[in-house]
Image 1 (tube, rainbow, N blue to C red):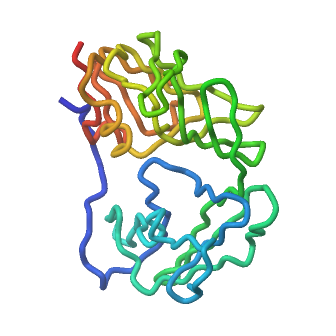
Image 2: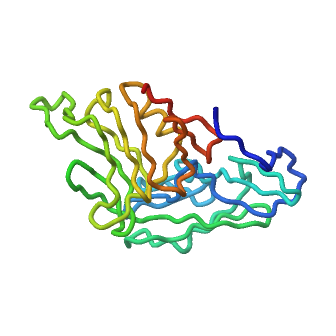
Image 3: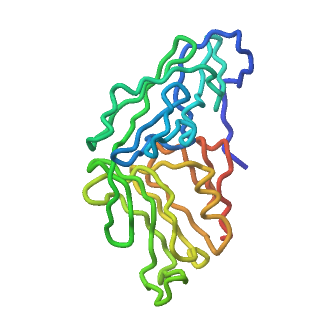
Length: 239
């Protein structure tokens, strides 16, 4: 069973309550990664350019809400929220802030303008300071371009840094079968969507999960991985 949580605020569905703070829901992710030249848009500034990425791609229209009475609502659709993109330089690598305002409250979301790089088996997006994993190839390449690579190990350790940048999120598109993976270790700065983790690593022969980031919201108890500080079952390894 999940660890017990006491004095937990109750979810609220009452839109008449006064909102005291909001935060991007993110579902475990802390950053929005865009490639250099891509432009973040909402319905107010959407055009017809190929480089536009709508806010819905990152669920930026959903926020976690705190109410004046102490109740809260997770993943609340922020209808008619406003988005201030003015601080973002889409042509220069770096971390910028997107400001979301709703119900007279505001929050900022770090937006990383990045480029694609490769190191070892990994492909990733980075601005040079933080990185998001996108792909991982196997260490035994296939001779057939239509066949997946193979991976010789049974332990999958995601890197703590790539090119000097902290690996903070990203579930790679694995170019090999993960069925033989028995152990996975997530790095110190890493936090990711629980849906992505449960979808990617369920099944197979996984027996052990190691979390090295105490601020990720993930907890391993009796070998089982829980998200949201123990409230949500995420992975139940076979071992």
